[in-house]
Amino acid sequence: MAEPQTACDRSGGDAVTPTVFGNLLAGVLPAAPKVDQPWAVAVSGGADSMALLRLLVEHLGPRRGNVTVLTVDHGLRAAAGDEARQVGVWCRQLDIDHHILRIDGAAPTTGIQAWARTQRYQVMLQFCRDNKIQQLFLGHHRDDQLETLVHRLRRESGPEGLAAMAAAHPRRGVHLIRPLLTVRHLDLIATCRRFGQQWLDDPSNHDRRFQRVRDRLLLAALPGGEADRSALWRFADAMARTRQVMDRQLQDFFTAHGQLHQGAWASVQIAALRQLPPAASGFFLSRLLRALGGAEYPPRTTRLNRLIEQINSSDLPYFTATLSGCVLFVKNDRIVICREWQHAATMHYPDDGRWHRWDNRFEIRVSKGFGSIMCGSLGEIGWGDLRRERQLHELVTALTPLPRQARSAFPIIRKLDDGRVVNHLRGYDGSRSNGGDDRLNIVFRPNGRLLGPDEWIDV
Image 1 (tube, rainbow, N blue to C red):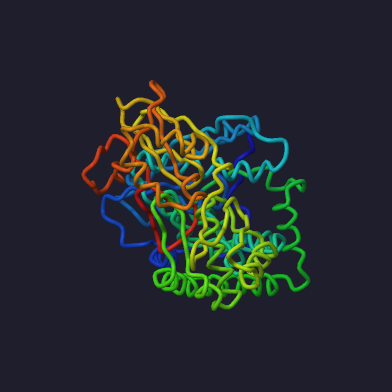
Image 2 (image 1 turned 90 degrees about the horizontal axis):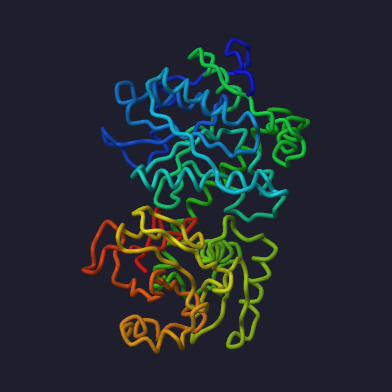
């Protein structure tokens, strides 16, 4: 295990005060928290997350019992388990609930950090969904934001990607809250010093095999020093403000000219889309593609620009394209965007009453006693087979008007015990009933923002 770092070495930073942190929280929370509202905090044991934990505990005072600390053990290093248990020791000293979440499955041989990040979010969001926690606090700070910006510049990201991490972002029905994005890493070390709090230093943070570490060293070596880093941060902040404006314009445009259909596919008027400036249409299509295709990140700018050129110049009755796991085609006077059904894997889910993720687009919950299920695209089962099952007349009637590609991507659920297809159109989203069987819930929850702060539709 990495030796806990002493909190008495001088960092040169300025500790975050209770007043400053209170103002930071007020600026990022989606709404004023209720007195008994539970909060989860991701804590690795590093200086950043330990500073966040101590600031939250200080802010909540006697309400600290609302906080649950989550530490993820990726199983990548022999010392990881001991380090997670050390975080537990510090939490017990603060009288805070602590859970160690472990990753199932072996790590890949390449892209380890990206894999670890994805797995980390999955297990933490699953814990929050299972325990009805709506806020997950993360310790990302200004230095992390700059590294994210450099990474996305390298990926040729568009305006949305260059806005870097959002201070508040919905994901799987949980708000990811990053109150420290304007605070430097040095200031968080100073904050740990203010509390007399030790922390752990992950050796992978210094391993030059990882691109993020090389980006960190690049930022540290900028000729202008802090002035250059501040300029980059102001650029990311300007892009974030642009993203907020574009969010509102996107919502208005989609309300007027587009539609999100049952089954998680969308259509938009061709003439209206062609009238948008290229930057605006790129932003709009990027949102749709990421949400409907289940991608972790927006498409690369070069590929997105090529798509926009096709839309603006093609003989549209014959237009078809694929990008980010989606297929785009023309139907009447609209462009249709839907999932490529061949890329949606069939998955099995137990009847454990928990929310599970399918295809990075849907949330599925099966009540205990219903029986285990499998979920896959209709294309894998076959439209002809479904039409021959007489008891599914209502489902077949609902799917018949859909474009063929959208129908093929429609999620179909079978019970594992007898192979019977379930008419899940009668389900509900867990918060409001539409008069059907509530033992099976399937809800579209896109991976990124689409229409507003936390959109969903029943399937």
